Image (tube, rainbow, N blue to C red; front, side, top):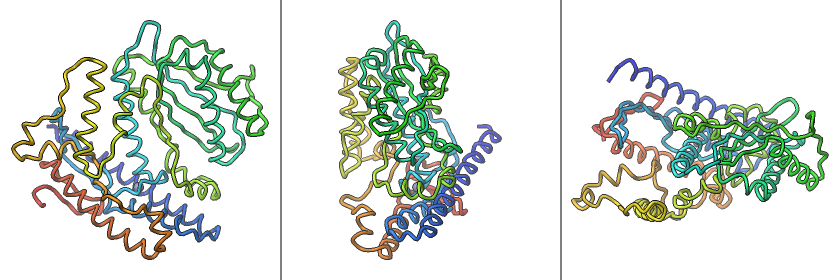
Length: 402
Ligand SMILES: [Zn+2]
């Protein structure tokens, strides 16, 4: 193992963690500032701000050296947060979600088989800016997408794909766009833009919005870039199509009323979606949720294996029984989800605040965070027995110290 490579890798992880901590803290303070400034006393929003703040505490972020890849044995440095607030305004939690999307997409891509005349394309879809708030703009583009997907044209040309949403804030308002990675038949550029533009016009009419597409030919801007079906070609495009959301630091730049509006969303929309031929595996992964993570794992694995059998005829192997029959739990630990399992029937935090007030919630939160951080440290140490960990506030932990 080359020490210099290792050191620079570790340094990279530290830098990533530092950036997340500082972005997270500024996201929380931007929200607190907006709430104060607008005299908003909504306890849920203050609760949310605090969750993001706690998630961005230095003691909540770990850096690990000499973690091992369970398949290849390769060593690497890693970082992450111990307790997760799960907010879309939190850079650490958004990064986690983005990583999940990437994994999901990689899995879908593995299952694709291109037929004659089919190809991968990276498509960027844009709309004219409707000069509305972020959430309203999003509702408009979502409607356009629904119309577009139902078209015979779309159905005949696009076999499947992934869609992610991105927006940037410009002087002229939100510039909202979609990134698609699709398996398609040959696409005529003008025809494709005409179909997309027609959907834009219909949706704008439905929302009573004036629709002016300021291009020479009056058709919306669309980019279609062919992607090589080689492993490297696909790998290269994945980060681009899984960005998940605009850079988290731009929450600070959001107008206060929009920030409050976004913070008020109880169930954030999915920013990443998989459709058509890309779907098969994902369904299997989200079908099950049991209070016992190990049972969930077994059931999920069973479904995945059955699906694989249906598709490829490969024999079913549910799990390596050899390793659990002798009471060893290493397989179990290795394969559990990377999350501390939640206790069953825990009241959702918003409901808790509503019923018990903010003061009581802060106490509960502190207790919960402490427990989760401890459990997660144990989990990491057990999963990576030879790794050395420390949190950003300088406290180290490892298997040996357990
Ligand atoms: Zn978070």
